[in-house]
Length: 309
Image (cartoon, rainbow, N blue to C red):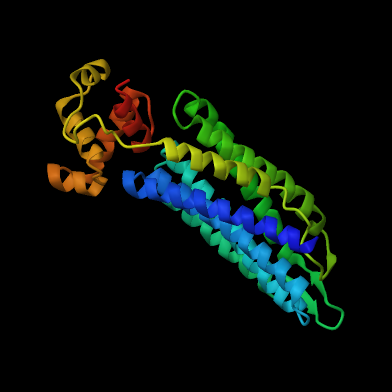
């Protein structure tokens, strides 16, 4: 039975790698910042799954697998869990176009590192090698509480975006991500709530089934299917935007230049250099273009130009 569980976990990871690879390919192809940030957070959760599989495999197959090794791997798992939260907040604040995004991400990252230090510190846990038990302390409780607060904030930000993206190509993208996150949130409550009180953990196998792996697999399949159907404009020349499209959205000559550069795969810095304008000016023009067309990213802009709608 244990071998079947590990085989299932490996299948989940392989599907995740396939989804991550094709998403990363299009992130590089389109140079879309939000898509790049999404790839990072998806990769981080894949690392969480990998650590869980390693912990399960070691417990089942290594005779002298110690409580210390288990706790160190658990700390690594929690580090990646914190990183997923920080990566998701960074991604969502990017979609919200929050100006202090870097500062917010840096703040959460700093607290994440402090929390990880508390988990691995003497006040985080006391190991009993002979009894193969771990006495969780106040440091672990503080880190767990902060993780729960961060996760809650992340979900609030995510659900707040639904209305903004409902009529864009990003709707299914966000719904899938939120379903995945919500299941993980429920799983977190179930597994971490008892640990907010002083407790003793006995070294044992990992839980038989990671509930959030199911939406992870389904979301991975959705990503694979979505990007297999996605293609860059093929009917349009890289230096052409239809007059009908320009007229429909009231695109100015300068905005047309920006769109053409985006179609050529140019980054914001490249566009600024080639048009002899500042990076801030490029971002302002892109924001105005997004507002006129009703999109909020390069990814959606390319899709709209491709369709001519």
